[in-house]
View 1: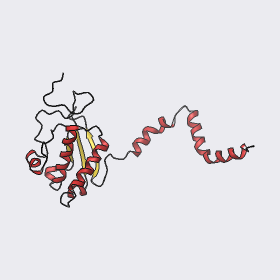
View 2 (view 1 turned 180 degrees about the vertical axis):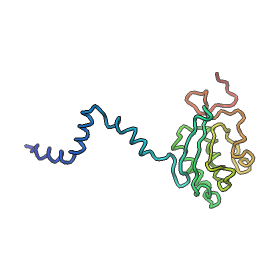
View 3 (view 1 turned 90 degrees about the vertical axis):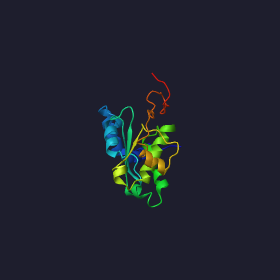
View 4 (view 1 turned 30 degrees about the vertical axis):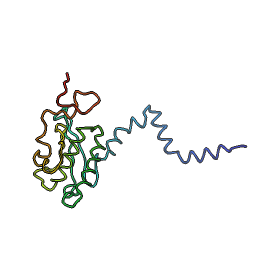
Length: 185
């Protein structure tokens, strides 16, 4: 069986001609496509993290209160009106997933605290002076044993619950929880 290499080669070359020419030029210059375009493409095409029907984006500040951190959610009108329209739980779950998609290392008590702060902000989302322009969630607030509206009001969405709790586990390698009574060097 013989194959006409001229026809096969011509068709393949026609399909990949411009692409191949560009790769040959980049290779001849000693540059790889990833090295050349990677940082630019990643920056130019990067979508904001955590965008959904309830969030315009999620950001994390790890410098101001290091080693603790603050997560900020830019809520949409859907998030602000969720509790009033009977979709509070749905909004809380969606925002939690938005946060998890951007900050995947939230576990145990720290995860409970962040989830409770999200829930509280959703419940009081229409009270702009209370929640602010963003829903800010801080890693240094201990979770509530009984998260409910009364406790959210009493603690100001967990802002008054800290008590030396170290939610970031800064001294616990590989973990994000550190009990208040633990001793670390």
